Amino acid sequence: MKKNQLNRREVIRMGAGALVAAGAAKITVLEPLKLWASPRPVPPSDVVRFGIVGTGVEGCSLLKATLSVPGVECVAAADLYDRRHESAKEVLGGKDIETTRNFVRLLDRKDIDAIIVATPDHWHRKIVVDACAAGKDVYCEKPMSHSVPDGLAMVDAVARYKRMCTVGSQRVSSILYAKAKEIWDSGRLGMVDTIQAAWDRNTDSGAWVYPIDPNANVKTLDWNAWVGTKTERPFDPVLFFRWRCFKDFGAGLAGDLFVHLLSGVHYVTGTNQPPDRAQSSGGLYFYKDGREFPDLLWTMFDYPKFQLVLRCNHNNSEEGEFFGFYGKNGTMTIQGSTLRFKPQGPHEVVEDYSILGWAKKDRDEYLAKWAKNHPKPAPGAWKTDVEEEVYVPPAGYSDHVDHLANFFDSVRTRKPVVENEIFGHNTAIGCHLSNTAYFTRKAAVWDATSKVIKT
Image (tube, rainbow, N blue to C red; front, side, top):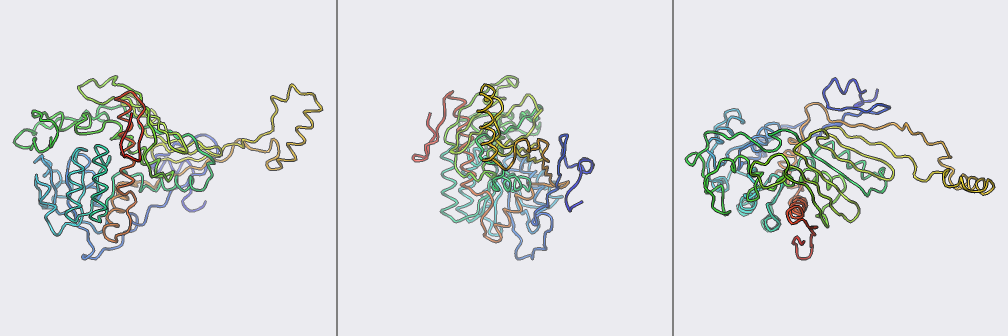
């Protein structure tokens, strides 16, 4: 057995999450990236010190992932909710870091090289722009922007202050998606005109019905600062803990999940532009709890060379996270942590149906001519049981760690990041197109000249 090739039983036993279809398949466990798998000791002078703004769900997840990245150290955390100061310290093993409600304190510290932004979407622009102006590199959670103007301002700030900026869609750093990109770039799929992707869930948590922390009140939380420049609102912990459901603070299914699907498709296909047009459908069918976004969303996107159909459903999880790339010469799918590639049969095949109405002499002449012009493969030589290729990451693999490791390596070396602000902005525009199309019930078109969405 070759190195890194396992049979199906071994993959299942190691818990890699691969469900291999019946029939022949070659299963390969992918090599982890060196940044993650073989960290070299980093001298103290090269340690990247960072602060984090927002230590809620994703903020704590990112903090935990940084513990596996060599040569980085969290030295401060900012959050408008006091209880999350304690959460940040707990994730860091009780480390005594500075905690504050005011993120500007982190920007003023000369010993901080980079800022992680893990706040609700409506705060991304302010913090990223201010961090760049303060000379800090920035890791900003997805979606990068809450609106197109926000994204344009962020792109401008990164360029003006010559900072490094990574947007937090981890698939761009994943070894699984790197393999998918390798297959795409090889041309083995042939012409691809159809791509579809889905991310379905069927739990209350997956639909953002998060529990309300009873300790949150106007004394422990700076509510007015959190609401920011949006319309004044009375204190409402539902808005704070379930902000993804509301337009003033989040972007619904498009901003939370479509952004991952779009990032994955853009990365694999080498696309770095917004979709040309979006048409959306869906509705609010189950979670009628006051939210402003649908719990089912479909969007069809037009790109210059292919069509992309995305779906997110909060009410059935059978398909989970799925990508399908459908080419003339092959099919590539990613479901969860398993990548599959299978060739398609040749599309140029001898015709044996429509010629049934021909005279025998004419049929024989056609078949002889076809055989002469198509020596490879000869008629009937194609095997329908072509071996399927299956790729899985090693057990315990984390693309969160890889994505953060890539960012901090860029901070240290000044080499380009893997997902910069332009890529993140273009992907976010796709999310904004989707929501615009849904709420206006019209096709949403990206005008690249005026840099606005038109309907």
